[in-house]
Image (cartoon, chains in turn brown, green):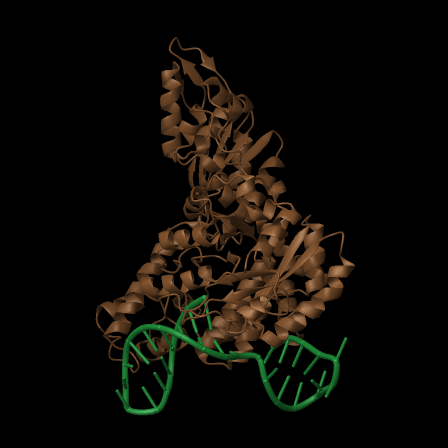
Length: 575
DNA sequence: GCCGTTTTCGGCCCGACTGTTTTCAGTCG
């Protein structure tokens, strides 16, 4: 049983207990345990074998016993009893935006509603509006929420959710005899922030055993189509995938074809035609019928007279024209990044001590690290008061000395841009910090004018260096604040304030489009992990990919600057 | 249900917004 399956079990228990009306702290304990299991760097099953479950944060005697029962028997008596009391399908209703445990319980007890379909029917037949605490607007909200949920279920999955699964599949394919290459394609390879179907390409001379092994994996729910070159499946986790198998001589054309985007390929095929070739996934074919096979994409582009175009650019956003005229950008790479300027420790809501975060950053090759814990008004994030902020500053001093020569440490804050538009710390406090990230977290639904005003107020403060995850969107379906982005960009340009590409795959905020606009205007960008635990430093590549999709070059991004240049930039601000 | 550098019991989860109310319950981040 995987960590995720264990975590899902405890999340389900928490949901059902919440609907039942259990004391909130018990529910929070289950959620914390689920969160902890999800973010565990090791297999819970291995820890179980060592008898050390209790050492997992948030796992005490009771939950350790439940994990033990699950790993031994695959079942949990406690959950069986609970779901006899509270139908499991009610947990699904909690997924509906603006619907929580109290309302779900209300509908269930008064109308016997246990499923999404029953709830939708009741709302359409006007049966919800008369319940206590409900009304017309609340009933409409339920319907709107159901629609939003259904859109989400049929829509795209965040890149970060698909990524680990795609890596597993690629590793599986590469392990098969006869497979000489396996690569992601489609929007996954282009690193779009969300992915529809998983497109995977393998190179092998005989496709049959590859397809056979692929569809016989234990986690396949359905085989939608099966042929010698293409097979489509749905996995039991809900992901759908297409696997193409081509001989390695054709791998270049096949990969170019499968990577897309469609619009990019239309342009590329037109250029091929101009050069006297018909381009397909199999070959470049001359008018006399002779075929040129390409084992690499480089050869495909080279044959039609173009330089290689990185997958992240292939969206038909001017990259074909730039390739023709030799003006493709020299894109930033993961190796260019030396600094992380937005991270958390257990002083606020991080899961690790400052020392652990520093050691992890060093281990990941960073040479500059900013610790930017939340500020006081974000109560849920255990935000720092001025007093605690100053204590933290002192606590960091010996660490600066201890790790001097290995990493440059910056003391900062992720400061709340509060609902009323003011900032959480006064200027004289901000002046004492090495770096200030300002972010929106609350009152996201304010009208455009109001929320934009809040943001501009932060950007215009000379002590604010970086705006963290500017729109505060969450993938896949929480839209960000309704900001007037152009006003935000103009203010950032005037003040020289940096805008962040938050590398957490739930965020990727700024998105590629906004980041590209910022680069056009000469606004400095940062790429930060917003790490709340050591493992989160590994999320950096998602942020770099988003920057690449925004045509970012090394010099556009503060995190690549030599430390002297970065410190000079920070010192010049706030004056 | 978990946790503890005085604690094995008593904290832990705060504040804004919405829609329902006529002072507040529910939801969300």
